[in-house]
Structure formats: structure tokens, C-alpha cells
Image (cartoon, rainbow, N blue to C red; front, top):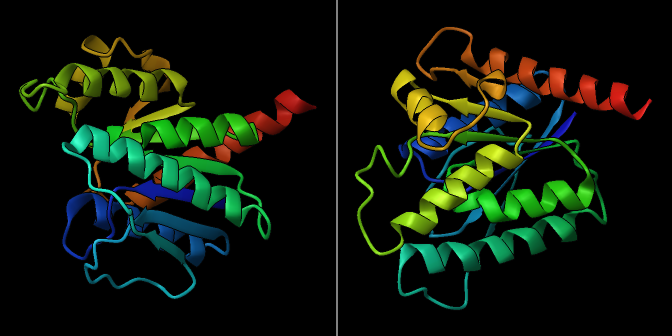
Amino acid sequence: MNVVLLSKQLKDGEAISEYTKNIAEKIVQEGHEATIISFDDSSYYSIDERVDVVRFSLHFDGDNIYNWSMMMNNEMKGQVMSLLEEKDFDLIHANDWTTVPGAVAISKHLEKPMVITIHSTENERGFEGEQAEMISELEWQGAYESDQVLVTKEDTKNSVLFDLDAPEDKLEVIDPFSDGWRERILNKYRELLKHKKEVKN
């Protein structure tokens, strides 16, 4: 199993970064391969040396987080395409709306399963700002296009169900502070890959 994980940043102590790092480290501990793709903001990070980390810079600054994220996703896609010359990925794991466009494009191009973790929704965050509606639309797209939607708490599950109208059968709460949470995520990966293989056959 070779998993590529997309995260807006990779920084010690930052919640989504730590979540992504923990999953990647569990993957390599189990004898599989993991690659993290993220924007390079020069933040310090520490990680198991068996995890491949690709950090990239951007040549332009977006005038808001939405526009910046769109530029970041274009670069993420390019980074993954470059890596395909030397490795093949079995599954794509996105984190929040900031990585949805890249994850969806990569998943469709490779015809490989996609998992998304929605750590919170725009509705939970107050639906404020000029880009709020577009951000919520990306969250909907991420939930719709993915094969598995993970959330980290019940409140987010309810928001994903009712605000984003996601089907409950592909939605699961996995609390990253609970025992065995990383193994549960790997089991989800295995189920998706097994299903994909069965469908192909």
C-alpha cells in the first residue's frame, strides 16, 4: 500500500499537520509507503525518516486564503505527477477544503480511491467572509467525490450530513484522541483497496 497524503502545511504542533504525520508514521510502521505533500512555509517539523515528505513553495501570493489554496492545489497536482515517474500511489488522503481540488483531480487521473478528513466545516466556523460559499462548495465536492469521509468529532459529522448532504454510509467519526484511531484509518484504507480490486476483477 502506497498512500499520498495532502496537507496545507507540515508543522510541529499544528493540529492537521500532527494528524497527517501520525497517519503517515503508522503507515510506514506497518511496512507500507507514505508520502506527504504540503506547502513549505519554512516551519520546523519532525517525522519518521521512512515517510517521504515533499514540500513546495509558491511563486505568487494569493490575495485571500481561497485564491492562495487554488494556486497551492495546482502545485500539489504537479508534484504528484512528477512523483509518478518513480512510484505509483494506491490511495489519496486529503485534509479539509484546502486540498480538495488537487485530491479530486489526482484521484480521477490515477483512478484510485480518495479519502477526505473534514476537520471542521465552514458552517461550523460561522460561514463568514466573501469566500465562505465557495469554501463550503469545495467541502461538498470533497465529500461527494471521496470514497470515504472521515470526521474527527460528532458535531462535524452532523454538519457534513445535514449542511453538505453527504451520504451517511461513507461517513465515519474517528477521534484522533481515541485509542487505536490510526489503525482504524488504515483499516478503512484496506477496505477501500479491497473493494477497488474486487470491482476491477
